[in-house]
Image 1 (cartoon, rainbow, N blue to C red):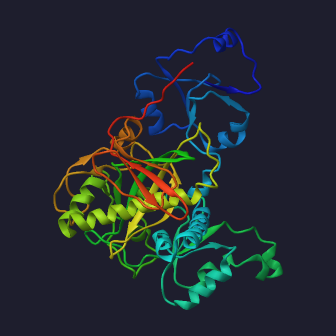
Image 2: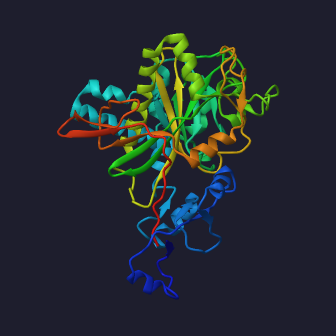
Length: 431
């Protein structure tokens, strides 16, 4: 159970602590959100919602509660909350790039340049305004290419824009080179400037990315679950570089696409990962697709390793990350952002998901399932691949069997266990 450290114990609580604890039949949960997450938690058999100040075993909290209360709350061994204290090391766009760059340098020192290339899965990125001058140097080396600006701490495509001219980002010049009048102005919001992927892989002429969920149960040791039932998010308009101001062409966020004039809420703009894999296998062959998905696994592992030493790992914490993976024409997967899953990621009405075969060149054809399935299955049963990894730098995999293996890395041996599992993750509650 969880309670404030300063609160006094009432009734028989002290006496119960002296007794051997027996398993309790229900799990008491709290949820700070009012979206699909709360609905699904309420539907779980044996889970009982706790109101207000009641004691709880599982809390899907918001980050403000975490900042204000974590250090002042007593939690028993079994209690779980849904964020690590400094979760932003992986979920803020500027921090993840900083951590990946540092991790890449570390691997290059310890294992060589070839091993370090396994971290080359994010586009060239600069934090603005702090790295404005570095960005300008790079910009002038490659005139005419397209860049994309993203606010470091916003979601759902808000604040994003593409540009090809320096005058479009003049507001992010460092304060040291501003005029006296400019220095009195309000500071600009922190952004990252990334080299835009001008050659994305297209299906039906449309840009898409893959949303993949990874559940991290521990950073020390690193234990993560990869969820199988993600989805591909398509743009509603055929891709072109002739109009960089059209968000319906360049942004795949459902929050953006569902505002398009020709968006069909009955069909949506999503495929299941399974349908995407079938399409790619039919077009490129099973071996190519296996390589693609293995490279995506590498993104998940390397990105988690990059923050393993900086995340405050606590036995009471877990984190559900949503990775957005873009694939280019060379079938190279890339990512520029990972995000914690919270209020805006598992919504009841963010569009249906196409799961059936049909005209694969038209992303919105086929039969559909309500997107509620994604939230339901995600929280009810983790049909995933558990990546129980201890400091690994390489990975081998088996489709259906758990197996141990040893992979040698710089200075130590790395133990890897990778398995497929369809059983739900359950809390073992005592109290």
